[in-house]
Image 1 (tube, rainbow, N blue to C red):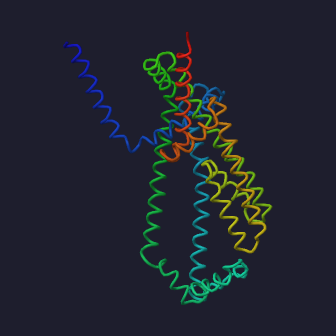
Image 2: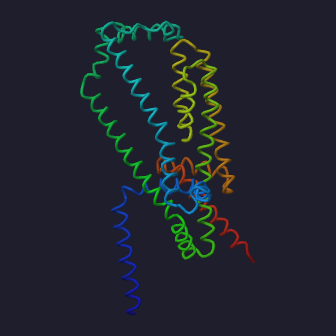
Length: 349
């Protein structure tokens, strides 16, 4: 009787400590999950790096080098994009300043829009065509609202930057202690689920790696194809636009924000055929890539059916945010493994 009480007391005490630990770390669990996802995805690269002659047996230097490389691959394009955004914001500010002095005349193509062209031209002229109208329409830029939005944007950028640095720090320690951590995870899986627990852990790892590879490969492919489309449509800087599209394409259907905006710019400049063609081409590429190619790459690696792969991607994205892109298919892969084992046990004589 006393032994049972001791066991219950230890379980209750352990559960309380676990809850307290989760409460203390809850703000950093997402960052830790990102570090684990990056480590699982790049672990073969890390092992190959340690096997090279230059870094053989030097795990610390290998972890530092790969961590810095991943940080540079992510931060350099984002930094360049942010600098371009700031340049464009300055140009936009100059345009708006000039508009308050002389107004913005309506574009020639505006009146050619069927049914609403004349109405659109009149409203444009009233709102932006004269200096007084432009000043009234753009008055909010001089109020505290724009300043508040700018401060919030800068605060979010700074917060995300420090969060990313913390993720890189966690990634470094995961690289250093990855072998011991993986052994502990496998031992815990065996204790919880028996010998099949190891298979579940392996399936979860394969699902994470396949999801990341699928997202990156499909994103690069969409960026290349749409970059060619931007060049044929006559847009300036098609390579930059293609790279930006590739980054957004790693999130299902997010690339449409880029090529849709580019199509609108072409239409606004009077290139109706080029804008329409780019939009149709982009829709076809996105639909094929996100509905067929990406689920096939991810589901094929972990033997996950197409429907469950697609539901895992969108369900994870809806419930866990960007991190859910990797957690969703991983959970589906583990659940599918448990389901198959259950069916085999039921069918056994």
